[in-house]
Image 1: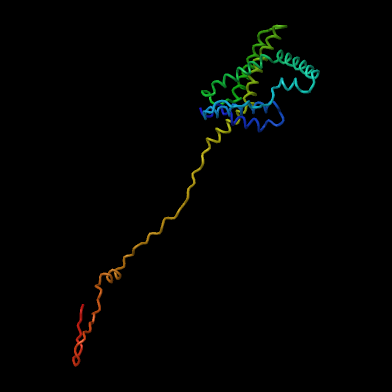
Image 2: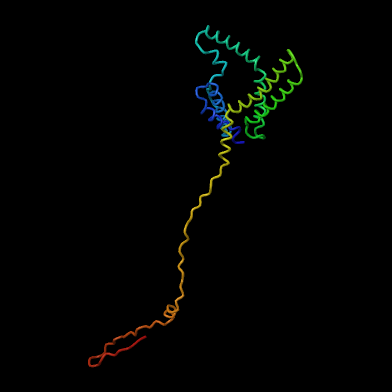
Length: 236
């Protein structure tokens, strides 16, 4: 598969819309790195002789915001607290989103390009089922809270996978395939046929052509001796 997973087109799409967002730039740069690596492998060049630079990850940017050991330690503590809060509130959802995205990413050659629509549809169906189940089972207290937490993680994780599809530039693949399917209308050049002379039957002309052509007689003068008149010979 020459286009692999369309990393080049997706990288260009993400970087064109990244703006000042470091996270979006990092996604686009990583896709571009993969695209260049695939090109080198196809050309038989192997790995690059230098490490390609990309935007730092979120955790690194959160910790090393300012210079100085005290500043770094303070930002590291704050980053640790944020990571713990996110892990408790949405950790399972993030794992489910990556798993759902990775499943289609692995099967993209069989299932075609990735689209956010199926993930949103699955999330809507799961949300409706979870609401019906929670409203009919009559759970109360901690059991109800735990059930809602699980439902939120599952539905939110699948819905977040739809965002991952968008954030990783799969819309560029849809645009490329749409452009490749467009047909170019054939160009028809109208040319006039060369005029063919039409022979007109003219009996009088044919009669003139059929008449023999007369040849004027040729007169040859032959010199004779003095006292004799020149002889004239006619030749046809």
